[in-house]
Amino acid sequence: MGTPAALPAPARGIAHQLVENFGSLDRSLLTLPDDIRPLLRALKVFGVWFGRRSIYLPKLLRPEAAALLALLWSVWNKLEKLPPTPQPGLTSFVNDANLPAPFLGAAGFRTVGRRAIRLDMLERLEEELEQGAASGAQAEMLLPRLVSLLGCGNDELRDVLSHLGWWTVSVADAGQGAKLVWRKVRERRSHGKAGKQHTSSVRVRPDSPFAELAALIRK
Image (cartoon, rainbow, N blue to C red; front, side):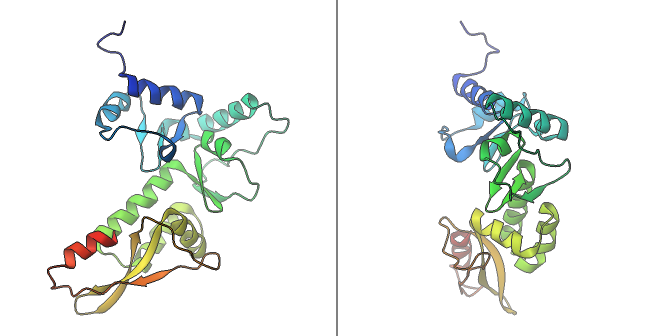
């Protein structure tokens, strides 16, 4: 019999999966209820964070904890040769060694394109992009801040963003013609050569009654 303090069944399910997956889950692989607020309330007290793409425990991203979890994953999977764990302090790195996604997940990273990105930095990256989209910040003005989060070059960043579904689009800028801004699209577009950024053009007069609607569609 349960007690009043017991976790509700859906929260117990998430907690169980977190244990089985060494502390992190890919949200796209989960079936979550439409209203996840009860889950958030139930699991927040245990340090569980529901991010845009991952569910994880931020405390387990600390170098010692992440290294131990990566080691435990390797032992659990009976690997003869242990993969190298990410160096402490790295927010992202090129996954040249083709480290498996479950191993990187145990170490607190998610593969995006060719780069492995720490889960909290991936959250901050998209948070910055969403804030920039809401404020209408120019794409080039955001680049230095985004590059500093990942510790990579501009071309590498653009490749990451394209894999996440973020593209530059041209929008009307009152009194200044047009400007490029970052926008999230539902489907990834073909970008031909690796790293090449696709740009589309959306022109709506800023004084038009459809301006706000167009901005919502572009997000």
